Every structure is written in structure tokens, then in C-alpha cells.
Length: 152
Image 1 (cartoon, rainbow, N blue to C red):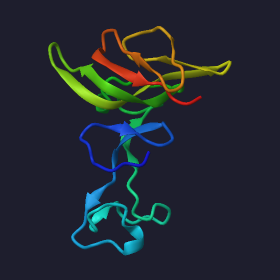
Image 2 (image 1 turned 120 degrees about the vertical axis):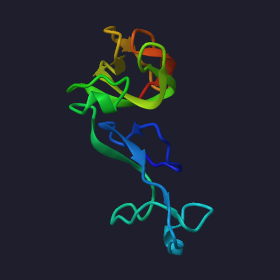
Image 3 (image 1 turned 90 degrees about the horizontal axis):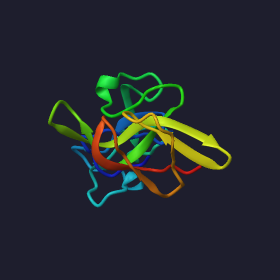
Image 4 (image 1 turned 90 degrees about the vertical axis):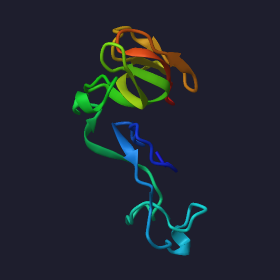
């Protein structure tokens, strides 16, 4: 996923296989004209042969949806069927009475007969998730928010 600002919360990578952070940063000097994507000439991403200083979500170590470190990925359900889904106002229970906001979570995703179903942490039910819609999260792992349904 391309991005324009560095957020503290983890976000989904373009391939949906992991969580990561935006590579955007402010440089000491202006970037060459052909690599300027922002109003400020010194804002962009580190140099890459393929990305031309265009910021994107870069996965962090141990944040793979299949076999990452669950302590680094609040609210995520890990496994071979797990993919990253964007969240809307997702709040993960973080202790007895505290909550943590997250931008994305890993959840089990199943594609069958032109439909997508999602199973997320704290709820064993498979929820039908039509493209472009959202599903409200309930259960023991969350205190509110929604998951955006992915394209089929």
C-alpha cells in the first residue's frame, strides 16, 4: 500500500501478508525533481530501484500474518489462511480495562464461490464480507470498530 504519512499504528502491506509502517520521511536535502511526490521537496521515501522514493508500507520483522509474533500484532489471528485487513476505528483490548487503536489486523480469510468470509480473533464464526463493505467486530479481543472487506 502506498502511504503519505507515518503513523504509529501498524498498517497492511500491499500484498496483505504482513503488517508494517510507512517509509515516508523528511530528508535533510531536497529530492531530485523526478522523485518529488509531496508539496515539500525534502519529503519522500528512502531510495529504491523500484520505488523511486515513493513511500509504501514496509513489513516489519516478525509481523507476517502467517507466522509472526502475536505480541507485536495486537488483535491479529495468525495462521496459513491469515491475511491483513484494514480496520476502521478498531480498538483492541490491551489488558483488563485499556484499549489500543490499530489500523490493520491479520485475520483468517476464505474465498469461495465468489464470496469472501473472514474470521477474526476472539470470534470463531466465519463472517460473510462483501467487497467494499465493512463488518463490525465483536467478541473478547475487541472493544469496537470495523474491518474493511477486501476485494475478491
